[in-house]
Length: 226
Ligand code: UTP
Image 1 (cartoon, protein in one colour):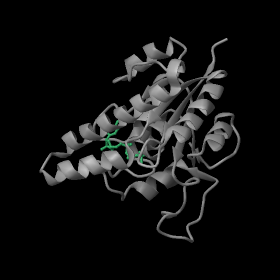
Image 2 (cartoon, helix red, strand yellow):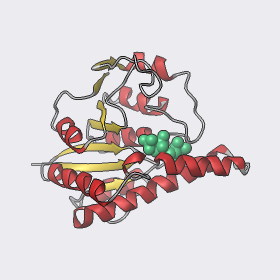
Image 3 (cartoon, rainbow, N blue to C red):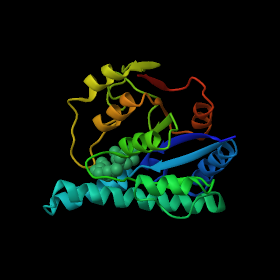
């Protein structure tokens, strides 16, 4: 029987300045455990390091498309680091397009990708991968517990949604920035893909035990209703 497929986006903060051997190995162990039951594509975010590079290059007068490409390169570096943490369980090459991801999955290994196309976030990339491989389950692990009605890092009274309609979420993010490095929780490309293919999408806290529960369908974080 074909294994269930799942796409898990890991925020760039997993690989960033606070990462260490212990934290990376915890994520790797959890994914290897899920990997016995499911075929996993992990998508690495760019995080702080991507934003740092993008901001420096922007000051140098670099155009937005090239800044997106810089962000993609950093997310791929993070992906490569995570391949080392996964060892033999991972497919060794970082795919650069959707077709390569399909081929990589045929090996049965955990596939780790970074960004793919300029003009979007790794969340959009994750949704596109999910659509392409018919995974239907997209877990977006972030540095917050789920989707709030305001940024919980700025507003301490922000309210957490256990579920939210896709249209409501689209209306919420429509006013957000679309500059390189500034795509927040979900960008419009991600939401459009989630909507058109009715992907079961959950935004959860980036904690190995929470991600594992989400992968097994438990009601954690915020589910997006399509
Ligand atoms: P991320 O999507 O990782 O942004 O890619 P982020 O906001 O840092 O996400 P977290 O915090 O790690 O979860 C970094 C930048 O790389 C470019 C965009 O400019 C994005 O903001 N990028 C990434 C693309 O243009 N296309 C992609 O497919 C991925």
